[in-house]
Length: 395
Image 1 (cartoon, rainbow, N blue to C red):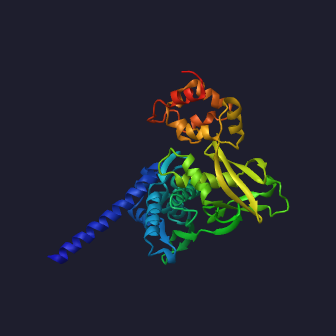
Image 2 (cartoon, one colour):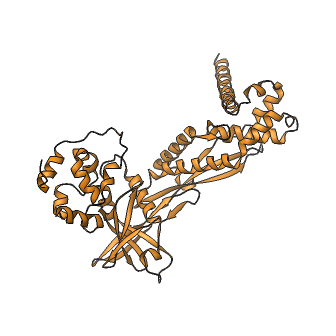
Image 3 (cartoon, helix red, strand yellow):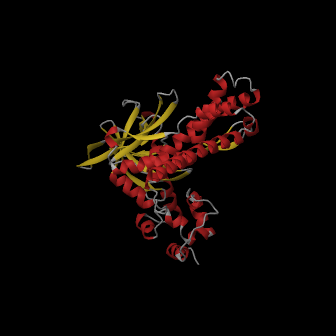
């Protein structure tokens, strides 16, 4: 009796697996309009095509991470992400899953291209050949790289380690190709510097960037006018700078990884706007909005990000304009919380036209537009009135 039940369970699992395969093929054939043509083929030819189905992506951890609980969680998140990824298949303009593309679409295209029995089926052959266009392959790779990086970025910590991923294409004993996504982890790189009369620890600024592994941010020596240094100056960040950055861009939940990622991007594409007393101001861009400046010095041939100044703060071009316009300095800005993004997005100052115009004139009007206009935000009230009273702008 037990043996029969085991047989039934095994048969049920096989049937489910077979049905899942058929569903995958149906989705792909539907997307390229050959479902009816394929259904007319002899059963033996159908089975031949389906038997050539390639394995889906396999996620593996590098050897040293296989027993690490955090890394196992990261690998699962990458796997879950890939299972959901889709892209638009050209020239059919239909959306299919990336796993379906690699395991079914690519295998079908290869099958119809190389199998003599199928080579005469021009309609199917023409449609499937389009699956392997450079445009489709480039779109899939771009989507894959960007989304895997997005998952890993959530777990990267500049002062601990960086996860990164590589793709390996191997061949199974049955001749089928299999694509492995291998997750790696690299320890952070720290260095001690003598600044302000004390030894300070700073961390090298990097980020995962498929397919290159970890890409370290560098500052072009031309940007800081120091041609005697190597062309790409290594960049290190003090913990203090990150703390100030997180503290002042303070209105997004679980956003530290994203805020750091934009810091890395800002340094990669550095815009240096001011340098005094050996300090440089590098613009910090969050998406398409300039939110402040990274105060940077050059020590022993290395760029060190010392702190972050929100765009309205003293020491920035916009902060100087606000002082000229309103007469406010650091203490005033801190008291009114004008040195934090939350004030511009999460309070009723957002709805005060006169106050908005003042900040617009001083180069800070975009602070009110960091989130979409139709975003649902619960704003506090009374802040605009308090700011007006403090600045003697009337009621």
